[in-house]
Length: 448
Image (cartoon, rainbow, N blue to C red; front, top):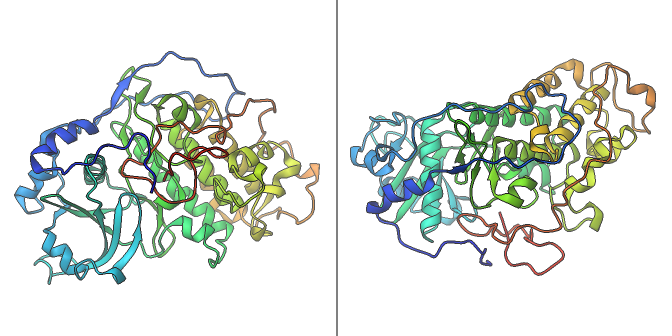
């Protein structure tokens, strides 16, 4: 794999460094008075509000996994997070046998396992997923520590549950609840996969939105920073849960407008202002949500090099059409024909349009997104509703005065495919998704 420009030099991390590394996870915040180019006013009433509440300082040494490991029980700050031994995790994965592998990525390898009283007395019988960190150095440990800190504190039906962790010598492992249906990415884009129906896609969108809204409305907002289909996992009933918190950041406080950080993330999902400036806000997540919503609506990947050049970047190709009632059928997944109503299509497309606004302040809050998506779960807005989407061209009469109004054309669009900043990388190494950092030119690395 290629070397992303900002990758940290490899190092072995000892327990004595845990507190120092935890300090490194703290956000470097600053304020900004820079004005963003104006855009048509958003219909979302809270579009310009800011959150300013705070949570306990993640730099507190009492939050380090070393302290929890020393206790060797479930007593302490994270009362339901288990400190496993390496031997216990080797036991449940059959010494990390290759046929137990669920997946691999830049962070490491994920194995299936099963915990019960044979592993430790008192453990509830439960299938789990065990993520083993690659021993590649400081940056990977930082991601691992970030996941423990955030998922150790935060509990929500739409966040994957952290069952436990292991921190022995240079070994770093995380144990999660097992998600039986895997990632949204597989269900949307795997060739052999059966197309997800409209109702399931809207349910997944709502669940993921609720997860982000919960993070953004924490006592101190949490910015997820890597929202994408591969990080949305699905339970047996297609409940969406956010996973992989390695790039998450504590949000700005008080009068701070953003968090200043090195740009890391996934090409095709990252908000343009974050890519350009490194300024991170909750609205950066909203943009990424808009990309995923667009993927759900179209059945297309955010970046797809197999398509014609003008269609390779999904946002560039689809967003202008969201503003044109005559072109909606050109972007909605044809496999969804007759599964949704005109009203539902308009609302979903309008929501995606605003989430993808170039101006961050014009994007809705995730709480607004949840409110918009909730009515789309009802029968009145499904294929059994009053107006089923026809297979022919749309008639102007279908867009009544009650319909959601689209903004005017002419808003300048940021072309993400023009340049993705050279210092963008996965914090734990490049992932081979065949998405070049600089499409159309030399590829310095590959990103997650």
